[in-house]
Amino acid sequence: MTKCQSYRLFSFGGVDSIRGFLQDSVIPEDIAERIIADSKKPPGTDPAKILTANEVPIRGGNVLLNPRAEFRIPLGGVFQTALFLDTGNVWLLPSTVVPYKLRYAAGTGLRANTPVGPLALDIGMNLDRRPWEDPFAFHFSIGLF
Image (cartoon, rainbow, N blue to C red; front, side, top):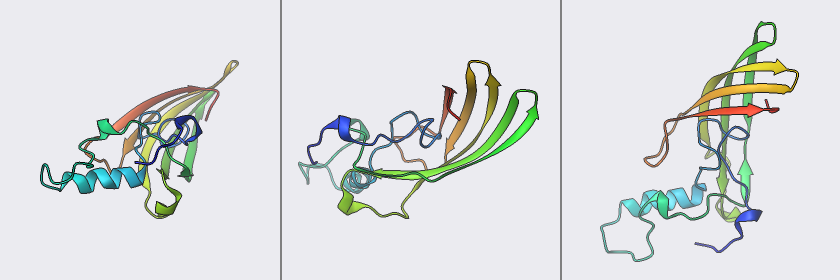
């Protein structure tokens, strides 16, 4: 794996990118593909193979693509509900970017405009879950929606 400084990478997953994933939990696509390919190899055939997602120390990349859509429905007063579709992906190496290879999450949430700022509670579902990923994630945010 390429050595890189983690503070210079784009993190992906969470309330500000793709809400069906936990915050900053998405493994870059080029590394995830390698984990999947390595899992199909017989044990002991490749000393450089990555065995599990837990062995990936840095979860971020140099290229990030994140188109999102949200439909808000007023409920009355300060409350709204929302339906959303978040897409996107992150890649460690720019040479491995495939712009149509995206991750998808859909969900719903509740919003409230308060004097201290907007509050949002969302639940997102990972629509194309890999074995090491959670099926859904809850997110709470203040001042962001």
